[in-house]
Length: 307
Image 1: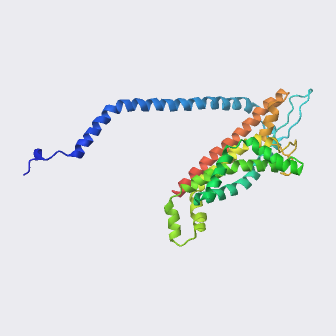
Image 2: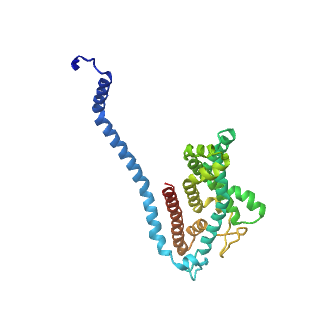
Image 3: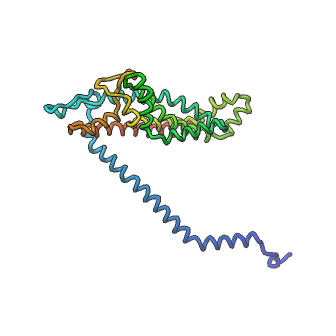
């Protein structure tokens, strides 16, 4: 029987033991570095949440006092020096916001999804040019979209309109939807596409019936987040939608909106309108919160159903 003590040393065992000793020697330093960076990350998170907390607290504290059924359903009334507290409501602004953003979604959602499918399935110079354009649109100041809509729609038609605001918001939403949808489509496993092609289906059929349904949770999340961003934008619509004290459902006419109502009320000489601006801000925050939470809920539910 061979004496085990006479066997040559195992280089793999010696190397493993050397690595373990080196790791043990540096363990304390690595733990301390990990704790320092974890503390920095938590501190940055707290610093970011502190102003958000106080903004939300101020909106709830000052805005909820102005909320009532009349405030939500009635139309605005201009206060006078004899009746400064009678401001009516913002029901027309709520309806106007929903119409403007809804029309913008009808434009932006199909365009954004179609462009995202092309970008996800193509890798050529034209696709790279589209990607560069999407990146530029993403970083473009939103006020420039309002100036563009004012120059090419309001001045050409000689009237303010909800349609002009919808066009500006649609251009704002397209890059958000495109980037989110492209990432969702690229995250679909390649095996699904290969399986569809191996069965003899055309590439367009595989994309339409396999890839897009599989990426639907991410696409829906991107669409709802784009809506949440658009519904609170003031700059793109401030120059183009005009104003109306009545319920207006025709987007070719001037229309009110919640963001512009906040802008007008916040600088009013009447204290009642300045208080009402907080109420409008509260309504706007609730709408954005519903869209944000709704996107998370819908995406999570669709993923559970697919699994």
